[in-house]
Length: 99
Image 1: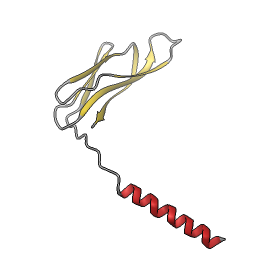
Image 2 (image 1 turned 180 degrees about the vertical axis):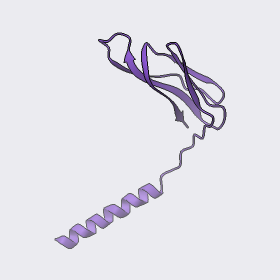
Image 3 (image 1 turned 120 degrees about the vertical axis):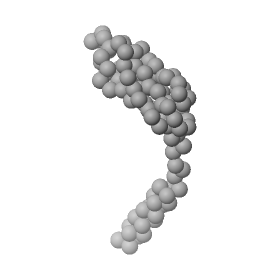
Image 4 (image 1 turned 90 degrees about the vertical axis):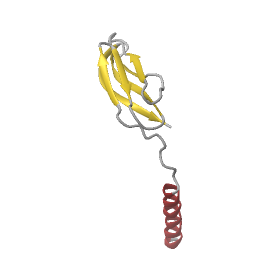
């Protein structure tokens, strides 16, 4: 019984290592990405690379009854600005990269 469990564990480990080894690399290689805020509007922009990007924002809505909110701006290409009007206090902002 113990040898069967060992064989099954070894097979599972081998399968997992093959899956990890064959995973394709990420294609989006955007560079020079920045985020900034002007009032309630949050922006992100990448100045180089390939792929598309969008601004991501989360925080507390101006209406306390709504609570925590997360929003994503439109996907845009290199050199373009993604913007979202966030109705509240921004706690976190970042750039999300896409292929």
